[in-house]
Amino acid sequence: MQVSHPFMSLCPVILAGGGGTRLWPLSREHYPKQFLSLLGNYSLLQETLLRLAGLDKEITLTSPLVVCNEEHRFLVAEQAEETGIKIQTIILEPEGRNTAPALTVSAIHLLQKGDDPVMIMMPADHNIADTGKFQNAVNAGYQLALENYLVTFGTRPKYAETGYGYIQYDGKIDSASNENVYRIAGFKEKPDKALADSYLVAGNYLWNSGIFMMKASVWCDVIMRLHPDIQAACHESHIKGKTDNQFFRLDKQAFTACRNKSIDYAVMEKLTHEDTARTAVVVLDAGWSDVGAWSAIWELGNRDADNNVCAGDVILTDSSNNLIRSEYRLVTAVGCNNMVIIETADAIMVADKDKSQDIKKIVDSLKSEQRKERLTHRRVYRPWGNYETIDYGEYFQVKRLTVNPGKKLSLQSHNRRAEHWVVVKGTATVTRGGEIFQLQKNESAYIPVGTKHRLENATDELLEIIEVQSGDYLGEDDIMRYEDDFGRK
Image: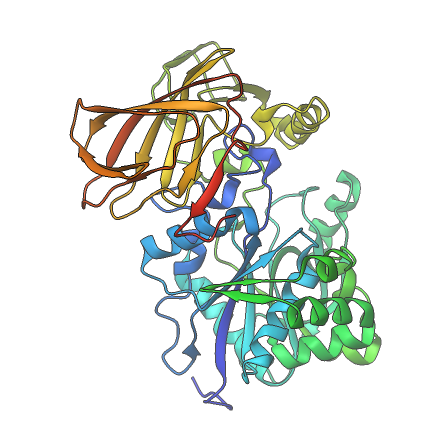
């Protein structure tokens, strides 16, 4: 492959701020679908990070930039570390403002470092089955991006899908060496069934994958012209932002003042006829899915002889075309057809597979009732490991804490609760007041109310603790931190 600008790099910009509400109860606000391993050993975010490995050697691939919610910053960092992919910066959004502002702050960040790479913006929660074909499409898009095109990627529709937006194309681009590159005639919103049927018959419509590619400077020029207020808000939020190790914290006041706009709405649908000559769509024939609902998991999963996709401890009889997933307990089904059954520690969801897009309505109900099942699982992840609530009552709570090797909790105290720790696996290093001592398996320590304390795993094996809390208030906000490895307040 001949590259006309061999020194221009390609920077992956990964947007990891999605909520994944249609995959509840597995996907939750504090642990959404991009961090879940739904289709293999890696999470969707990890698959996205690894997707460009082995790209054409004539393209200089830089370390990726990730944009995410501040709540998820340690999840991003930990999952990236597990893949061995080094992230150059994790940009933290104080509040989600959709894809156009996220891409704009990414472009500003890269340009202010003195670079003007080609950016490939990829959502962190999609699945692409054929990495080789995806990379071939990226190579084709890269050539056009070097020529200042705004490039997007579309998938040929297999059926009349009403849950996706569509891209209309009207002819090939003469300068493109790849035959699967076309001029864009327009972007279409999610259609009703009749309109989707007409798109399928017309043959010149593609599912919109939400993947975009362009130079950082080209994007900034376009957003400045079409939406100078978005450019100004993003620029101010970056200028006033602060670097915190590998994290970059955007200024909250400036960024939350920015309008909420997607790339499609903000730019692609508003381009003038002259601009349209510099927009292109590359056909992505690589098994793309946005994994937007449980029905998509069924379509992508390994089915048995009766077309069931099962995960976990599941026993079926006289059942077909089901998706059944067990996380904690045995799940059985008799005479069930076309169902989705998802079991977690604190919730069970049952739905008609054809209605799986409507699970968002359940999440909306949980939100209106202020139920915690919308936000968190019983197991909650922290930068040092995780904890799981085993039992609780009015004046007590029992948790299982897992502390990763080499990690330690903050030096802290509580005003309204005492704690009792029992080691069930590994070796704990305990700070209690002026004491520092070790606990082995089956040994315990008592932490009185108001006492400064810290739990550390100084070994290379997992540490598991049973923690019994007692007091008149057991909320997570009863904590005073004095020292913390992770910069938490």
